[in-house]
Structures are given as structure tokens and as C-alpha cells.
Length: 179
Image (tube, rainbow, N blue to C red):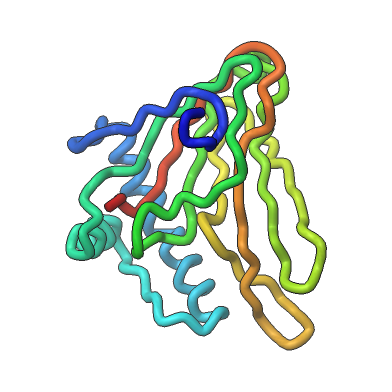
């Protein structure tokens, strides 16, 4: 709240990451790297994402981004998360994972919300239904979108709508490290 990002509890992990968090980060990364490389190709970017997560972390550290970014997020009634992008430095992998930890009947409100800022068009909002134990893969900053002249870039932001009752907990897995 003091930074204006919303209201809730954010707890970042330190290295070494808990085994389950490291295992998820390592296992989810390779198929997402394939998607990220397709996105880079479609957008005409020179980003070539390495095939394994350790190589991405080595790249982050070489660019002065040594701090891990996975975190636990807890929201209680009245809490929310403003629309944002999880960049953390010059190297930012284009996809991240959100793992729902809260039981489905433990809270109301608190929807994971994505906003796509489409060039020369109105913004588009998506609410991502996610239940306990499910993982949502969302864009970090930009995603490709087919336009009349070919692929173009759409800026994306995400947040969490106000929790109306109960408690919402998630694990955020951002694959790049922070500066």
C-alpha cells in the first residue's frame, strides 16, 4: 500500500528457493521458453530465450539482476492489487505463472484480471478463472496479437480485483530475477 500498488501482503523468497518453488520454476520454464521464442519471432525481436531456466538466471545475474522474484501473495477482505507489469530490470521473461493456493470457497471477489492495451483500439479486459491447485500463465509485459497488417505488440497489465470476503493466497512464479 505504501508504494501505491494496492493492499495486501507480499512475501518474496530468497535464495535458495524452497524445493517446490524451484522445481515449479525449472519445470514450467522450458515449454514457456518455446512460446516466448515464438512471440519474439512474431514481434521481430532479437530476444532468444534459452532452453533451460538456469541459463536464463545466469543471463539475469550477468546483467545485475541477482534477486529471486517468486513470491507468496495474500489478500484479505478489502485488499486488491493494482494493474501492473512485473519487470524488475532490463531482462524480463515475457511469461509468468500464478498458482492458486486458496480453496475455492475460502474467499469471494479477488479475480485475477488482465488488461490488454491494444494499439488504436479500446483496452480489453479478461478475468481469469483460477481454482485451487490450478496454474494460470499470463504475459508479463507485451504479447503478440494479429492485426490487419500482421503481428503487432499489445501491452498487458495484470492485477487482482478487491477481495470481498475471506482470504486469497497465490504463489507468483516470475522466471527472471530482479536488479
